[in-house]
Image (cartoon, rainbow, N blue to C red; front, side, top):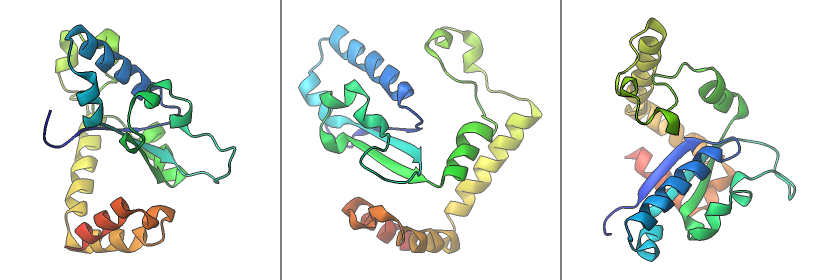
Length: 166
């Protein structure tokens, strides 16, 4: 495997979705007799979490997910959002597609997009968010806000901040 790693990104509450996804990937790799030692270096999991007060006893999903021990430490990252924003995206924003649970994988209806009014409005909202994120004004503002994030001390966030200002 060469090139860029495969990155899975999801809103994470407890990490169960990542746990199930990893189990399916790992089984597939084993079934195909693929080189796990090579593939494992190409996988990344980014959990978008609700920001909470930090403490040594704070719940961190990746510390409770057994699969993370099979990957390099750098393969697991978290991005925290304000709790209300996370709650909006995770609990309140209408989804443009139904949850794609394992039991639905063989269901032909899973290939069809939702066409109801709420789904169309949610898709329109997503398009507006992406369009706004491409404007220089919003990118500069986001870069400015990142300055106040605790993770700004990490190189990846500083690199992101620089790229937003371009």
